[in-house]
Length: 297
Image: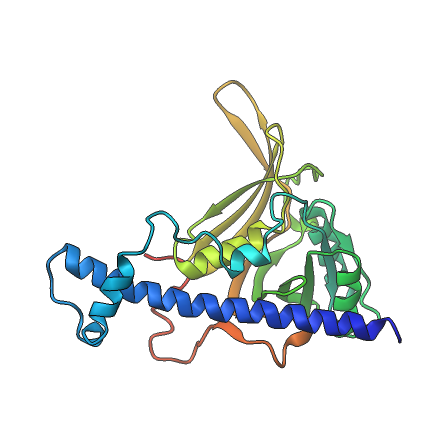
């Protein structure tokens, strides 16, 4: 147990530093929004908003020292995914405890979706031990699939070493062997089609999903689609071949399913009890059925 304690202390220190940077970033973003409101009011010759009038002179003074073009240079998202696109992600897939044969099959099919992914039998391992083992072996993302009576119903995507962790409901799952005219699964790095994620939360979710995949080569004939409609994310997996210089022929490879985001936490999976909630879906509010969150339309 000797070497474990310095490692745990180091992890706790790094986590505190990360949370401090994120809190600072949030405060800076709020201050920047207030400055932008004052700037727009001055440029358009409008009244300054009531809540900003007391500090308008101070905000105007700070605007004089700002350089254009320096916005958004770095933030906590950059910090979480700083090696994305430089190094290939290393994805680990596992299941909830005591999985059915159908859930094991689904986990195997997910392994085919992510290039270079590995699958681990859950056994009796606790979540904390799983996450520690993944961190020690350089895993960048841990995926856990859950089931209800043999049907996959949940997917958790936990980015390591600091988070975030996204929780999705799975629905309309169709396994590969249930798809007619099934194509052969390719191991090439896929091109991604990501559609309908136009809001700030949508961009956050698209980043979480996009960075599970490495950068593809130009000649790859494999395509993976995440298409958002009314906050349901449709996942489709195809290979294509050119029939002539103008047309291509798509063949579905599978599996296919829909994802519905219901929570994003800022920590990793084993910090469920203590990590801050970045976003949570509230289905029981009066306007819940009318609102969409992943797109700005």
